[in-house]
Length: 312
Image (tube, rainbow, N blue to C red):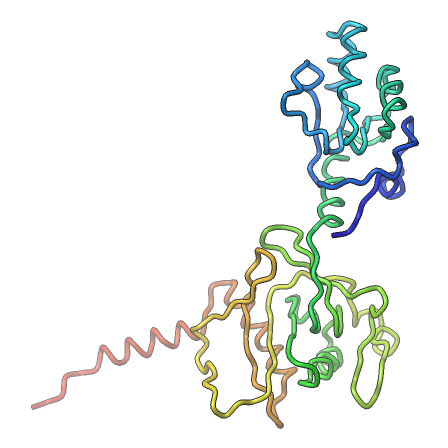
């Protein structure tokens, strides 16, 4: 899991550091944010201190209108805990002196943003979810085929990179070769990208490393892509029964997400790039409710059950 610090937030969202510079390197460990309205009212029993705290116009209006000077001091001291990563004041509002003093004492950075509370909450949540998502590296190739993120796996030398090269030549886009970094951005959303060191590079045995973007242009690559389908390449095994109809759907599980998986046997003369193109188009059709294998089975069953009885 990547590390995110308050300094990263300052840099990416161009906020103003008001106080608590000592804690600028505090780590943010969760993408959840908190608007501590009920805490300012005095209820701290379930205060989520490990979250970034947002103080909008509603919270600060209550703070100034309904709290005594002593209550203001106490509430802000409780708000600035040892594990609170940062406190953000939105709409460029004036930061209360009580908050500045409490943050300096404990070392909690207080930031100020010109954005509305709901806007900064949405942007910051999306940013943190992307950065803090669980990540895994898988040996394979990731290609964008007709808008479908196809993860190609298989043993070394089976032809993954050569297939990706053929797909790029046919107008599709390479995301990653050899190593795919996959992060789970939601319970059913996997996004893959290439490690920075090998971004846009493709290794072809006997040819070496090529730069796909330099050879084929900027339209031949993508920085990241949501993964929708896994295709596993394996050498043809004459003793193995391969699915010939397509009714059985194999799954590949990564984190909590299950991906449809197809096993394609590799044999001389088979055009793997065309097969993967068709697999991607067929996946899109299934998502739209058109399942050719299911329709064929239903027609076959109907044909069998409607045969006229044999004459005596």
